[in-house]
Amino acid sequence: MLNKEQIKEIIPQRDPFLMIDEVEEYIPGESAVAYKNVSEDEYYFKGHFPGNPIMPGVLIVESLAQTGAVAILSMEENKGRNALFGGIDKLRFKRQVVPGDRLKLEVKIIKRKGPIGIGEALATVDGKVAVKGELTFAIV
Image (cartoon, rainbow, N blue to C red; front, side, top):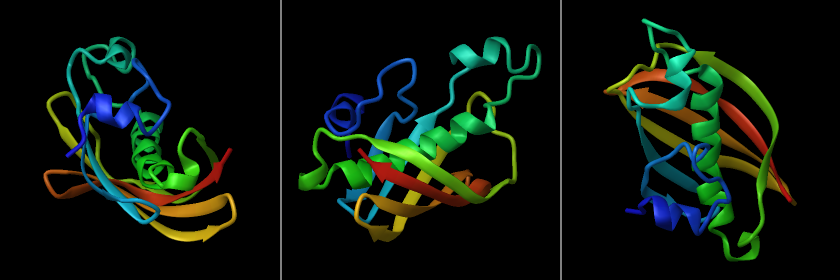
């Protein structure tokens, strides 16, 4: 299990844009499972949406990307580097994520060629799919 401080040793994101709270497990270059505890105090709930707070879909996708980055950037040859979005494919939003939810984030690296790769991404709440799709990344 990695806490926020240990996560920050692997990926460059920082508050308020560090979107994962803990990593349950990871295999460098292969996969990672992380969690985001969605609090009513999140900065984005002030405007998305007043009286009906919903975690923005793009931030769920960012949480998944950061989870995938833990898997890729924990590889010895990628330490100190960054993973950028190269594309998003087959992405579907299946349910809303709201304050109090514990978002489980799972990314499996399914393809790599040089600095480019694809991760199969899945975000769930209580075992129910919130978001799924493929994320393409580039290591820089």
